[in-house]
Length: 255
Image 1 (cartoon, helix red, strand yellow):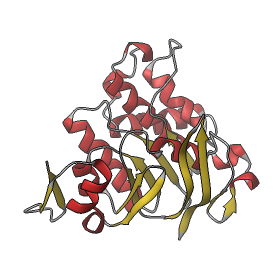
Image 2: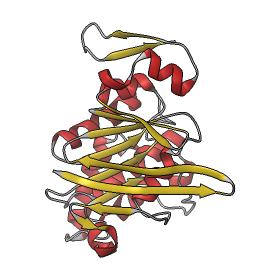
Image 3: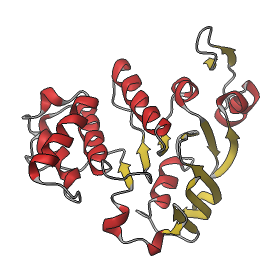
Image 4: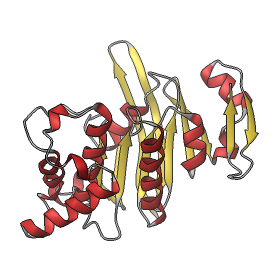
């Protein structure tokens, strides 16, 4: 089933064209990863899909146009993890995660239980009583991921999760744990879309890779279809070799 459909999304900032008529359908149960060089429109595309930024073009979730959704209702089905957080209030990490439960049909004890479970999933339960501004960048990312998971805890069978560079501030272990969590959500039926720069992480976890270059979709397919030396040379202007992982059987990019 198609969970997210967008067509004709374009964006120009100043005199620079960021996106040109971007169109795709994102399936439920699929982990889609957006790749591409810096400044090619990956994060901008997420902002347009979520209508954080408005532009011409059409966006729909689960067969309904975005403008037909009540925002509070859509918030139960659409979770967004931004690249950066501007939260500076002296909330504890636990309180930040529980903010994701404001729209839930649950009592405070129920929200606390859900938040606790998601903090365990994202490995931040030991940070529960720490003030959020005092956390490292990677810790903040994981706390916000727990908040988004709490927000989506009652989405039932309609769930879309947008992740903007969710591994950018994470160490090796937490990069893999975060992407494993995202993959599990997709395996359970969620439509998950993530912006990632690391081609090898994308190859290991992505079901589908969409490569953006100069504001256009340059490639769209499985990791094996997309991550070829010619495509990478064309998009990133860098020569690489691509081999097959000996046990995982996904592409490995060697520069």
